[in-house]
Length: 456
View 1 (cartoon, one colour):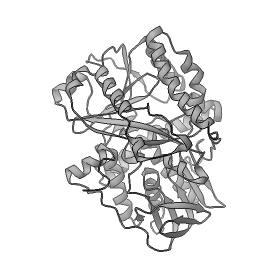
View 2 (tube, rainbow, N blue to C red; view 1 turned 60 degrees about the vertical axis):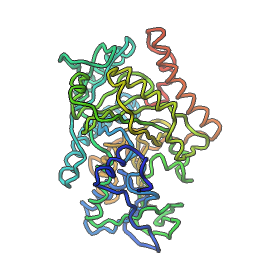
View 3 (spheres, helix red, strand yellow; view 1 turned 90 degrees about the vertical axis):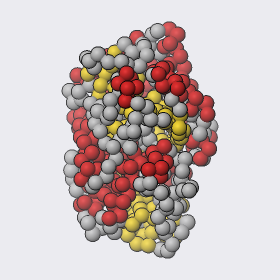
View 4 (spheres, rainbow, N blue to C red; view 1 turned 180 degrees about the vertical axis):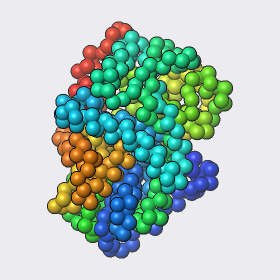
C-alpha cells in the first residue's frame, strides 16, 4: 500500500481505480546541473516546466519535490478550475488602475479554457467539464452581496455573472441563485499526476522524496545533493512557510474537505446540481463544493485554525470538529444527503499573502522566480503563473509579463505572536459574522471591518 494513501480522496481514487499507485519516482542521489531548477512538484512547478519546454524543448529542467508530485494543494483542492483571483477587481483597480485590473480579469477567464485546452491536447483525462459555479443567496444579507456582485460585474463589463432563471430544486432556504460561467469542475489529482507524466515525456527530470533545504542564486541545496541552475523557480505555495526566504511571505492557512459515497442520478436531479457545476453561497466563512464525475459530493471549507509559527504538520490535516461542521453544512444545504456515507476526510495548507494578492516575480540578476499566494484559488491560477514564468525566464515582453500581479510584492506577515493573533482573530471574525447575520438579519458589521484585510 502506498504511504501516500489518505492524503486526499483525489489521490486515493487513483489508487483505487488502478490508474496510479503513487509510487515515488527516484530521488536525487548526486550533484546535478540544469538550465532551470524548480522547487515544488505541484501545478505551479509543473505548468512552468510545461510552458518552458513548449518555448524551448532543449531546456534541461529539474523538478525537486519533497514528497510526490501533487502531494500539496494541487492534489487536495476542491477541483474548481475557476477565474477567481484572491483580490477583487475593485481592489485591483485601486492598486493598479482600471486597465490593469481588467487585463488581469480577462487573463483569469481565459485561463480556465487554457487548462481545458492544454489538458485535452496532452491527453490528460482530468474530468474537465465547464459548467460554471452556482452561488446561492440564502438570506437577506447574502442576497445583498449577490446583488453587489452582479452590479460589479455589470460595471466592469468583463464577466457574465447572472441570475439563474430556470426552475430547479435548490439548497434549503435559497432566495436567488447566480451562475458564474467561468469555472470548470475537474479531478485535481488526475490533472497534476497527468501533467507530471507529460513534462517527463517532454524531457524534464522529476526527483521525488528529495527535500530542498535552501536556495541561493543559481544553486539549490537538498538533503541529497545540490543542483546548480541558471534559473530557479520557487513553487512551494503554503509550504513556503518552511523556508527562511519565504517564511513570512506566505501564511499557511488550512482548508479541509469531505467526500460522500456516489449518489444516484435521481438525487442530483432533485438537488439541481449538474455535471460540470461547482457551488457555494455568500456566507463569510467560505464553503465550496462540486458534483464529481462519479456522482459524489466533494465539499470543503475554512474553519481550521492557524498554528503558531506557521507550523505545518500532517495531523493538522485532520480536525474532527471541522469535518463535522462540513457534514452538517452539507446536510443543511441538501437535507437528502443526510444518509450519505462520508467516505473520505482530508485537508492541507493553502498559501495566503499579507494583502491576499497572488503574485509572480522574477529577478533577472539572481535568476530566481517565485509564484504563489493563491489563497485557495490556485487550480487555474497556477496555469497562468506557469505561462508567465516561462515568458519571464525567456525574457519575452508579452501581455502576460505586463499583468499587474507580475512583480507585485506583498509585505511580510507580522512576527509572532502578532501573526498568530491576527490570523485566528480573522477566522473568528468570519465565524462571528455569519452568526451575526443569522441573528440580526442584517449585513455583518464585523465582516465590513475585516474586508480590507482579506482582499476586499
